[in-house]
Image (cartoon, rainbow, N blue to C red; front, side, top):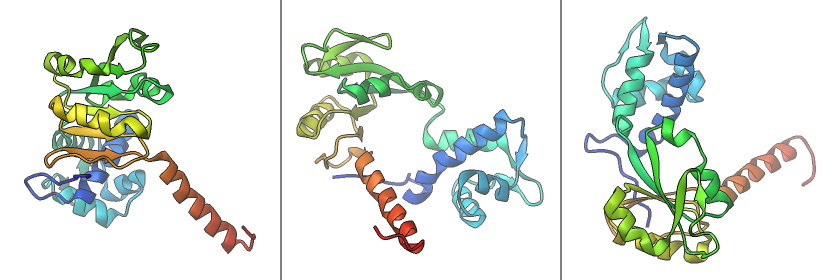
Length: 221
């Protein structure tokens, strides 16, 4: 079961899903030296329509000034606060194959408020390895890891066959948010949020669009 809910103020799920894109665009604007940005400029940088952006940001409060736009730094802070990024979130990654190791090495976690505190696997040939400064622990050590580091988010980077077992172990250890990279649907109890990242599905969607473009161009599939 996948649970995605807006916050207690009633921010729609679709709006929450777009906030990281706005935050990324604001970061790029700040890096370029921009101090203020219009809704049209921010919408273009985020890849959405300006009306949708204004409607999304209205759920956060009134931070724009007509004819002046938004203060880049202030809006960045407000979106970060809404997303819970003004504090660090400890993350445990389970599955130290190629994907798990790539995720462990991803520098973007630290710059966006996420700290990888534990790496786990059930392969004796992998347990004990050092990856990005952390020693890989056996997945059976998850209760001890949870007691010591209190991971808020668990990342499942295992094959589909073991993903449910890993999810069960994460939930039993008190982890209530899971990012699932395994190509399967996880069954979790109420109160546990799951976000699924399915690369094959995204590729299939792109293949659909490529086929449509080829068809429009008169090219046989």
